[in-house]
Image (cartoon, rainbow, N blue to C red; front, side, top):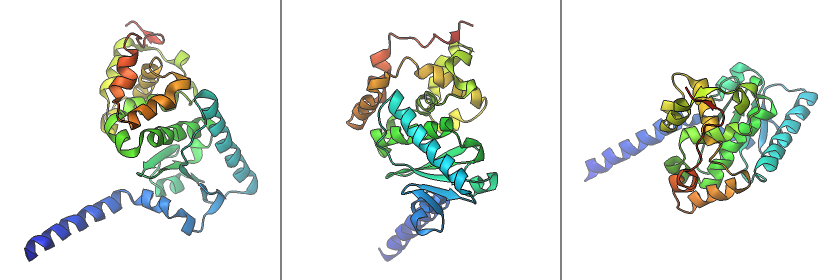
Length: 245
């Protein structure tokens, strides 16, 4: 029994250690209030040297992202923690690329904004990821929300030219097949830009803007993603911006 207890302890310790290694950025994000970072407000931290005019621009961008979410859907209630990095190396130190990345935790999302992501499109995009998780709940999100839908929904607030529906011309079968990409591993491989574009078109008929957050909360209450978003809209085909061949 004593040996069994030691084995169990070692396994548990290994799991904690591995989790700490792979989630170290999320853990560090939780510790930000204790670190010596410039702080714009309770949830926005600057990682690097930002002059006062730059800091003011960042603050205005975050306000604009919140306004965009409110205008399209409704006022966001999630409170993700933002880390704004001054350069590519600073972003890499936080486990992000030069544009943006998000670390998920059960109690909050941590959004890292790189130097190329300091615009309202990227910030609103990442914030909607956080809002979806918050509305659905962390564990329900992991169980129910496929990556193609999460990314396509985030792109509805991202007005960069490659992701505007009018600039996307894909065969209808590509738009349909993107729905098979339910995990990050499958979505973020091969032709990533095409996957993003296809997901943007695929979500178009599935999201009712003024009902979107309510629909997400149905999933939090126990309904399935399929029942809320797919079966409810099965008569609508995502072909408006897809080419027939």
